[in-house]
Image (cartoon, rainbow, N blue to C red; front, side, top):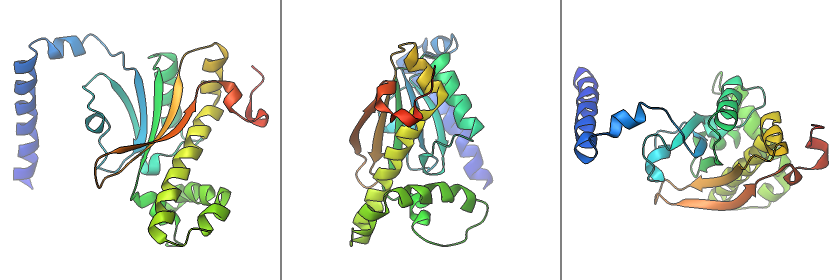
Length: 211
């Protein structure tokens, strides 16, 4: 354990040295502040590192991660990140990225009692309920699992758009788009679900706030 811990610190020093070798002004520039064009809302899964899979460098991606890339309107951590990204950093793109083989989504397919996380998983089960006719019609279990992952991303994209943060930004004609992606751990490729929301007209009227 001590050797592994020490290796982490050694890796940091090696990364600093390589970064400075490529760009001597790298850290001085980062220290001046951040202006990322992207907010990434992804899963906490250790196999899905936001920057790496899209080839982004430090300073380009503002990140929020949780189990199964959920957007919950009672989650103050997520809302605070969203508010800062949209209203202060003025990001241009918000990406909700799920991944095939997601453990949180898989748990929502069962009635297994895990612990505290059961309360979080319940929100993913709601997604299943919304789309149960489509999902129940899929006989192949892997295909059903994959489709559930995609539908979960779809719902989180729309839940983002329903927030007062996004609706207020769009009402003042701020240029910010929400996208839905699914990452495939097996081959490293991103599946763009072709979901892009860019204004309040994307929402059903019942969700549109009177701003």
